[in-house]
Length: 308
Image (cartoon, rainbow, N blue to C red; front, top):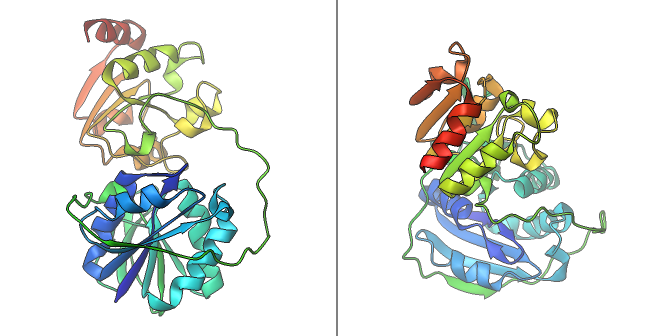
């Protein structure tokens, strides 16, 4: 068996954490070939070659893959699919756009958010906002899937895979790039951050969210938010953590003014240490928190930030 893994490459840089965790999940299935595609992807491919468990790296460097359009990347993967029994990608925003297209073009099912690999045909994935685990056995000749990286340890360094060029695939010409509107931030990327500080509806306003950001900056942490906070306009969409947002598994997760709806817990319950501050002692977040503090966050958080 052989595995084709789409690396997470953004602006020429490899998301090593997501890619290495996907390699860690898949290397037991067979030789892992990593595909690095982008307008600038050579450096990302060379970095991927150093991941333990990677047998080969293909670098598809072409402007066609420079603006994160799903259709050209899906067409490229399908053109390579004949040599592989498993085709996978980390369950990131880009991959969730690309892999269902790959599955449709190959006329197979897509297995999303794989959280455990049982054998070559059988996989586990969370359902019902993480409250149940579904075991899926596929009889398709080719397994197309996304990997829930929060559920796996990253493969280490020490690899020395061969890096070779891959010609661009056909352009389906189904979409075109118009413009990017990208928020710039010096903070760590949310899905790979080791520390995350999140705010919920209890923060009260967009202006008050500053206390979340100040604490995060003191800790060198990424900033997250519950869906309620995002829907209320307190925080931007790309900060949302939860079932319909981003899945995180940091070493430390601090929840400020978050009640702990199951949709939010589905996105952060794999954190190693969970700290909750909320004035409602009955808030569900306290049921999974390792450390809980009942009190007024507008008094507690500034004091905590000052002491740090």
